[in-house]
Image 1 (tube, rainbow, N blue to C red):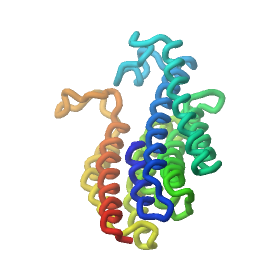
Image 2 (image 1 turned 120 degrees about the vertical axis):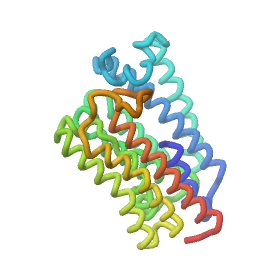
Image 3 (image 1 turned 120 degrees about the horizontal axis):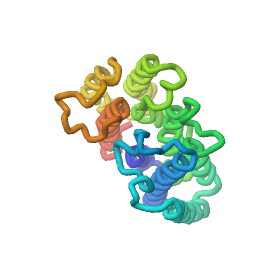
Image 4 (image 1 turned 180 degrees about the vertical axis):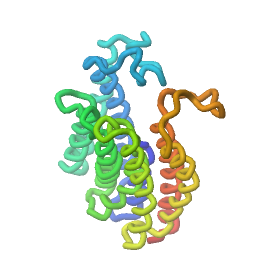
Length: 278
């Protein structure tokens, strides 16, 4: 997800005045480290808050670093601190090269990402997980990377970040607030918004017309929509006996759609960048 957002930013910026591949590449490394550090902190904060247990889905679909015995709590905290320290060093360099807005984008992303699981806000416990995903993987990542690459950013770039920001929508915290069925319907609407926003932004000239290649992702959307149209099954369906991430169901389907839609969207932007199409 992070690499797709960063790549989209680079393709939007590559033919703009002031584009620097060096600063762009450094920003991408910073984003990947930030994502890694955020995942480490999420595991640590959820463990400290008592959310992550052997019965919690997080420990069922993949090994939890502490609960599985891979590392101690202190080791996990040290790893998170080390990754964030490396990220801070990158931020210092980009601040010297591009100015304070880089810091503003970075700190905003750090705040939202940390507040996702960290007290006192714990956004995912308040039904705000999905808006957080949209904000971080859209305007903050794309806008911030574009600024690092070119030294400026515009509202049109922020608008261009919206399609992919809608694609990774996942039913994770909303069911707690509005119930499972309304959350499934809302998430389907957000995924459909990816396609609607591409059409609207291409028609308005904000995105280059080859971005419509992203519309081909609808072939995957149809299958994912079918899954979101029904309640979660009691277990992996017979046709998927080796389903690898159970008990995740809706989130896995949304990720599959986001991967296809995001790749096609980036392909369209790449075509536009290569042939200088607007």
